[in-house]
Image 1 (cartoon, rainbow, N blue to C red):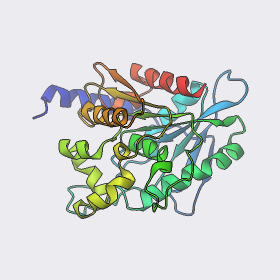
Image 2 (image 1 turned 30 degrees about the vertical axis):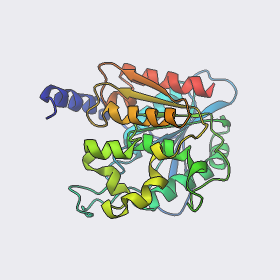
Image 3 (image 1 turned 180 degrees about the vertical axis):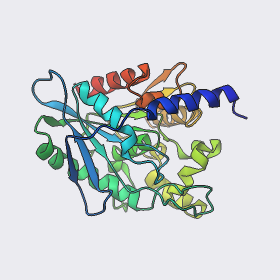
Image 4 (image 1 turned 60 degrees about the vertical axis):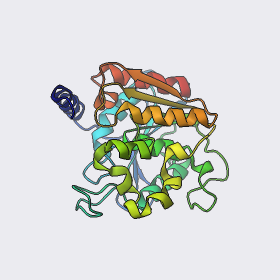
Length: 292
């Protein structure tokens, strides 16, 4: 049973992260025809001179429909104020009505969620160059929080997808690296722990599709990528516990890949995207180390 004090702390951290007003983007561009096929761009603020690295941001929310990119717009603005060009990506998420024997909104859509992330990543170099002339697309770092952390890791691993996957790339994507924030990075461990009410299995379409689709979706099965990767995780996270990140890092080590893991004391799930929290500055520094 989860410690009541931990639940109370998590609720306070979530309230702080969601208390910031949404920050409007400088430019919005479409990468497809669906209403969710959009990217919000934030120009680098301050005294940044010359081209700025591009940070591609994939939001979390257990791949569920009620959680869209708006809740990470303060984080996008925070990164822009740190001198980055930022692309905040939207994608199709689950239905707002429960099905697949799920309690609450079902997580994700198969294959649409993956279709969208692949399409957005493929379109971003051209979209960013047109929308933000300050963006240096040759220095692109992908980051994501929670379910978005999963999608960030997946986006960087498309070249190691099974050969028959429609999302497979013939060569590694041109990325400086990935910074995954409390990612749902190992589906087997996430399901064992009941992370987000079984959202990983829902994303794959339910238990009947688990074995078939896992090799195309689970970052722990898509290793090594050869792309620099850093994982940032709060030790007190009760939403996506640190065991999930540790399992992914262990799988990476077994595959011969080195992945950095930063564990933050007295930090839960939401401070990683909360501009008012010290953890957010740690995230920005991890991105900087890969981007600059």
